[in-house]
Image 1: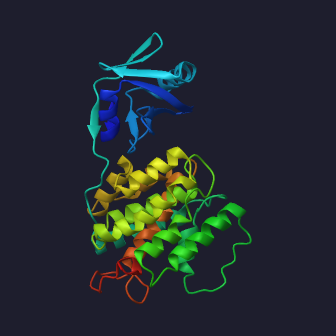
Image 2: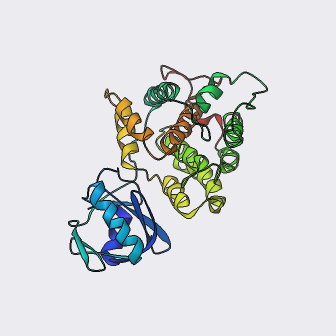
Amino acid sequence: MLCAGRVGEYIKKNPILKVHSVYKRTVNLWMGNEVCALYPKELSSTPMSAVLPMNENTFLKMINLAGCSGEITIQGGRLLIDRTTSKVGSIKTWDPVIKKQLNRKEGYRLSEAVKNFINEEDDIRDSFGRGIVSALSSQNKKGKNYAKVSLVKNALLSRADSILNSSGKTMKDLGKTAAEMIGLGIGLTPSGDDFLTGMLLAFWTSKELSQDVFSQFTGEIEKKIDNTNQISRQFLLCACRGEFGSLFHRLIFHAGTDENIREDLEQIQKIGHSSGMDTLNGMLTGLWLCGRTQDGNYDMDGSGKPNCSAVSSD
């Protein structure tokens, strides 16, 4: 079984875990004061997951047992629920912290790929959908009208506007504005939280943004972290530490190569009901903020003066 580093180390020391909750393709387990998740092998790894060598049919049977028992033991390469045992193999771990950083050219390449991908996908009623692409194309227009969208989408896009119009603010101020996204939207991980995860990914992987400046932003996010549910809160805290799922590791790696990244974007798009697309909207926002020059446009050839995030680090 393949576990994110902290998850694997915890299970080795604490093989008996209480069930937090179960879903169609997920068993959430208490990990001290945190929650980790068991996935079937069809799902990609996250910073809080343990992926079991089980197909979905076998996993579904395990979910039913886990829901009834309320407790799972993982030890000696086996998973035990009551008297039912399954082979899961030894615990192998991976580091969810993304080490690669993107220069301005790579960031621009990725932003264009993300923008084009979002623009080709169907809009989604109660999430960002194509909202950020539309907002960026109308940056110089005043009086944006969201009357034709749902109340949830209206709230999401209105807060996104506040972030996009953050020129001249410090990273601390930008963090305060962005933190208003926390808990906003529907789903196990609300759209606002997924959006922030995408922004954090863009900031974390930017060569233009120092760790100190990144910390100014995350400090404001962490102050409002209790405004969302426990599972979503953990994913946000992971992102504040530079920890992201394996699909995002792959995407960032390919952004710095000649590889076609569309397949990576297609896989991310499949995450949750709208989580993948909401994260991509947040990533596009973060990339745009990191890629702006003084006139508010991308520096396409990387020769302009860096103005990462169009905000100061004061």
